[in-house]
Each structure stands twice: as C-alpha cells, then as structure tokens.
Image 1: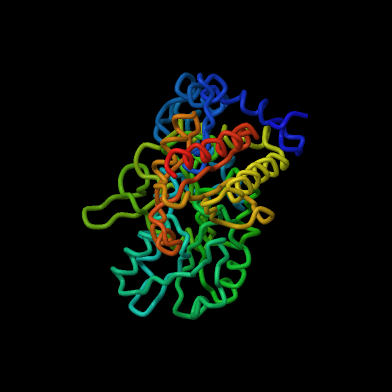
Image 2: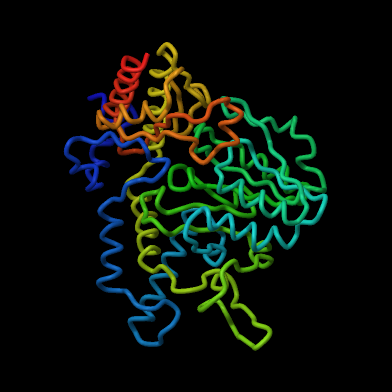
Length: 414
C-alpha cells in the first residue's frame, strides 16, 4: 500500500480525487489545503446544476404548467434530501438560504431581536467565526442585552465551568460552532444543548465545518437551530440551509420580504405563508438546490465512515510534522485528539502571509489571516495564523508538500 492510498484506513483518496475535475486535471499538480474555506465540486454536482438548467428550469412555486410543476417538485425534493442529511424530523423545518451567514442572521434578526431585552444575555465562544459573532453583537447592542463569551484555551477546550451565568435565567441563547474553523476542535454541542434544554435556553449551532464532513443529527444534538452551507461540502456556492426546531420555526420572522413568501398583501397589513415558504422571498435558487441535493447524494455514495478517519489521520500527521519543527507553533487539540481536518500554525518571527506565499510558489494552497476569528486571534496573542485544511481527496503527498513548504519558508526567512 502506498503512502497516498488512504493512510491505512482502506479509503482510496486517489479514486475519490478523480471525481473532481479541477483537482484531477490540474497542471501542475495542486496541493489544495484550503478546504475549510471552500471544497471543490465533483462531476456529479456540476452535472446536476447543468441538468437543472437544461431540463428542469422554470419558476418555482409560480406556474401551473408542467415544466413549472416539475421545477417545484425538484426544489422540494432537494429540500427533503438536505433535511435528511442533518436528521431534520421534517423537510419543512429546513429553510434554504444563501449560506451559513444568512442563516445565522435570519435567527438573529428574525427571532432574537424580538425576544431580547435589557439585562438579557447571549453567549458565544471565543472561537466563533465572525458570522456567528457579529449578528449577536449587533442585536445585543440594539436591545441593551449583553454579549458574553465562553473562553477557551489554545487547544480549543471550552471553559464551561468558569462561564459564570451560562445557564442562568437571563440567558436567551447560546450560539456555538460545531467545529472551529481555526483550531479544528469538535465542540461538545450535544452536551451543551442538553444542559441548555434543562433551563429552557435555545441553542444555535454553526455547522459550516461539520455538515457533510461528519455525522450530524440535529434531533440527537437537541439544538434549536443548525446553520450550514453547500459550498463547504462539495455543493455549489450561494446556497445554504437553516434547520429550525418546530417550536422555533413558528416564532421565527422572515428576514427578507418580497415575492413568494406572502399570503396576502393589504395596504397597511400583510400576512405570510407558512414555513418554510415565508423565509424564501424572491426567486428560489433552483439550480443551487439541485446541486445541494446532488452533493448530499454524492456524500452518501462515495464517503464511507473511514473517509473521515483518513482526513483525521492526515491532519494528525500534518500537526505532528509541524510540531516537530523548531520555532513552529501549532494550535488546536493534540494529535491524538484530532477529529477534523483543520490545522493552524505559525512560524515564530515569520508573517503567515509570507509562509502562504512561499507555499503557493510550490503548488500548496494554504490560507493565511485571521480566518474571520479576530477575538480568537487576540486570545492566542497573534494577528493571524497559517491554516491547512484537509478533505478526503487529499493524500499523504499533500502532507509532505505542506511540511516541505514550511521548511522552505523557515530557510528563506529565518
């Protein structure tokens, strides 16, 4: 067995990679390690979007002619597929949005804004992406409520016991990411949701780095809201989803007002359609939904459980190799505890952008910056990090290329 044949898991990453035309056909070879930002698209997803435009495209929920009825049926079939991926009890609890960011803003503006009052508090963690931080900061400011932060250490361990007041009656919401886009840690969302439920506190989970990459069942987690995006799980850009529990979706107000979500419009008052239609104003993204559903089918067909083990081992190998180098700091959980494909690091005295530029010249695609997590960077005491993020189509050769590029950056700048 070669080093690139699946890191001992039995999963064949080369065969999987061949399903992605941009990666399979790249010349020269591309070591793509920016999967936490966006994943590449397999032929199955690309073809599904094209087939939609060629054969099924028409206004959704608008026309009574056969083509429009078929378009509407395809759209709702896609909703059911995506809802099934995350274990939503009913497809109607799944709202299509433009992505995780819009999903979270929908909850912030369409639910939290109506329940927050002076003296209330919303909790987030210190490792949240700005998309799961700024909306709560804004609605708390508007309502006179307080935004509070659950601290974490550099390994990503949340300090729940020191979060005084987390489960108090003043807490109106806990918002937490499922997987950190910087530290790669998998957070104990089910444990937090269980404790929150005992106190009647809603929980929103940012699942952008989890959905499609690990088993997700919103009913088992017990969360009230779960937000995620298609483009991070091999689907098209510009479409995402929000799961909302039955009692929460009824209390949620639409963020966008316009065509398609209204039941009746009067001169001074209007009424909305039932969920999920009332949250999907405007022309629905039929092709995006088709691609989203195709990504779900692709994951079910081509990604067995040992694909996740393969990714975890690649990330662990990368972290181990980086930590073995002098003057290299690697953030996140220890190698033996890794459960995702995200590894962040720095070379002491070298700006992360310089490291990423050297890597790019060697065909290694990394991300450098604060990763939309400036509160976390402040706690780590750095302005930015270098991030390598792995997917099932990566191999041990990509780890070798990452290590070689890091060594080269050290040689050039130190």
